[in-house]
Length: 304
Image 1 (cartoon, rainbow, N blue to C red):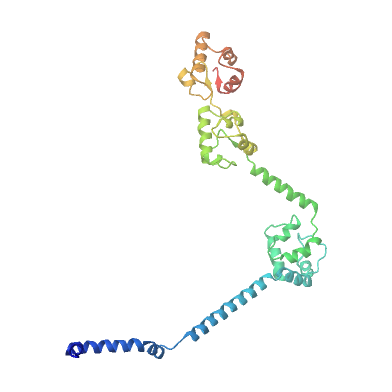
Image 2 (image 1 turned 120 degrees about the horizontal axis):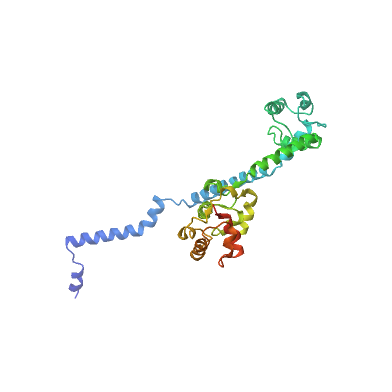
């Protein structure tokens, strides 16, 4: 009866070898946790120490940053003023031509006095108190102490004001709309390349501007833009190109922005009837020419 069971345990050489390998693998699997602890010791404690070191480093950086911020928050201007108060002993003075010994008496150092004298040697003058402040050799704290004692004669102040006024007048050189090129027009406030191009094109079609108000006829140009440049430009009447009423043809006249075909033809027909225009007033009898239109076109017409 044990014979069938015995057959289950009857292995050949190859099978015994396979069973041995399986047993060895099972032993290795069971022993792996132990071998791991022996071969790779637990370094969790070292890792925790590493994290603590990083935390300490970050805290040291924060403390250093706080120290820098504290240093920046110190009122160095106040410190500078304290030093200046101990050094500067001001009295009433005119900085223009003040002798070196007087500057020295007030507490300025030799290098500061040399800078001031170098400024004067090049023609520099102090026209107002604030001009002393512009000298980089004088600190803001020193100027604050000196300012109440600075006394500059009124004529020098007046000269400075007049100088500023002359400078402003020079800046307001009028631009002639009839001769200005596109680059010159760009110097006007609010006039870009597009508007400069439109102005020149419209000027060419008209034959020149007789009034700055004609800029409002340029596409996109409004009153607000005109108000901004009004004080800086003018329309030179001498530059207007005239049209001879006694020689112009209908097709030529209608090219002008102020004339359409019917108005141009009516003028030429009137000339044929009269034989010749002897006065601009003669075109006022033409029904198509109303008062407003006549006041505009008379600037571009002649009977010569």
